Amino acid sequence: GATVDVTGCTGDGTVAIRLEPAMLDNGAGTKNAFSAASSSATVNNTAPTVSFSAPSISTINSSSTASYTLTFTGADSTTLTNGTGTGITLDMTGTVANCAATVNTPTASGATVDVTGCTGDGTVAIKLDAGTLDNGTGIPNVLSAASDTATVDNTAPIATAFSKTTRSYSQQSFPSSVEVTFSDDADMSTVALANFTNTGTCAGATIDSIGAPVGQKVTVSLGGTGACLDG
Image 1 (cartoon, rainbow, N blue to C red):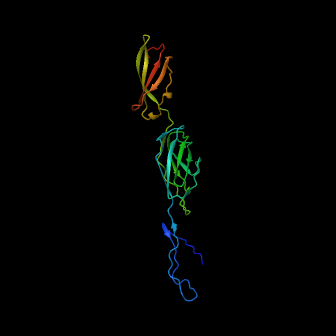
Image 2 (cartoon, rainbow, N blue to C red):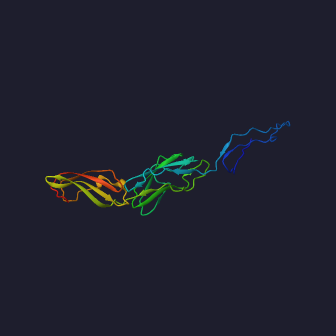
Image 3 (cartoon, one colour):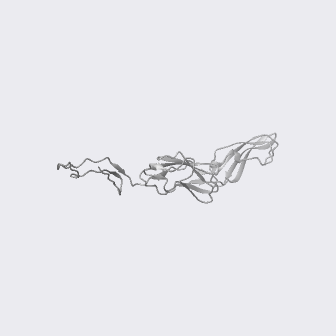
């Protein structure tokens, strides 16, 4: 018998070998015929790649999380490790800092990555580092292009105008609601009831609820009782 090494294959597909005729002799002058093919070996010279989903939420702050789904193509294995950020590069713009990436449930098919803790304002995106995927024949991925960005906004909305509606209580005027207008750059999705406090002279007033934003305005509904003059 013998061993045969096959090397240097380019492209993608399969390769097999055959023994050519007359390479063997039975000692009586009878030669072998052209053999059938051996089992084939797969030839794979294509580096694995990754694609990214859009971030799970488009705007985050220091206390929220943007999640990305990563889909791998042509990978046989990955060096990504569950619960760590190794293998993920963060691209931050503006004043964004302190972002952390965490890989979840990595397999040869894909993974999810959570981005949290971002401070400042700007954008954040992720990249998959070179060498984190292998196609099964020793060919790794290259550094990927960046994912879609998530906006990082840690600037509190700025109220620029107030317009109140009053109601009567004990022959005095008492605010029943206040329409609050915010600056054009305010992210209205971050405006919440907890953002409002009673800093006026109506000690008996309560801040009960806020309506859904309409453009850059929300209506804050007030309740409670107290000695409040119109003002």
